Image (cartoon, rainbow, N blue to C red):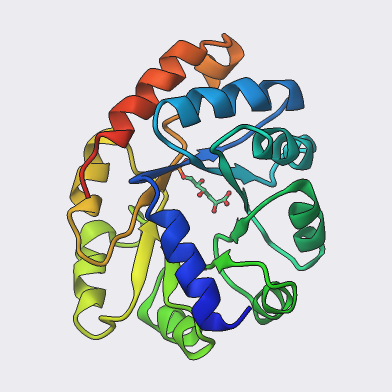
Length: 213
Ligand SMILES: O=C(O)C(=O)C[C@H](O)[C@H](O)COP(=O)(O)O
């Protein structure tokens, strides 16, 4: 997969919904009902963080939910790529980027949404062919003002800001022309997951799906 194909693939995926839920799944058995609630609420693109031992099993379960497009988040090193692909992940997300991770995702033809927080990091990723980036940690690294500032000198880049965003602030991010979608964990609160309250999670997804870009 060339850089352009990966960029186009990412742009297509991130264009499916205004919000990508960032999910921390502790028990694989909740993966399917959680994904069903989010997808039926209108958010088909899901990011499962590789922060828990259950993550790969969760990706596999969610990938079997009709309409779900599942990515592997917290991709920190090349070793996780093959397992993420084997589990059914269609793309990867990383909080930052390292040369070995970028090389490995290219070789594996695995579309990566690489994290960046500065103009230099964005330029380095551009040099390597990436034009769809995760702006992380968005709120702490300058928020909407930072995205406005980057739009002038780096007009070809498109972002998925993530980190510290909630329903109310998502609106401001989505109003930026260089923002494709936002990511956030507010769609799947730990207490709602613990209570198996899938209706509440579906409602949060419905509200998020209505956010305009
Ligand atoms: O684990 C990863 O892959 C990360 O890079 C971090 C996550 O994207 C953020 O932790 C989500 O941020 P919140 O919505 O503020 O919870």
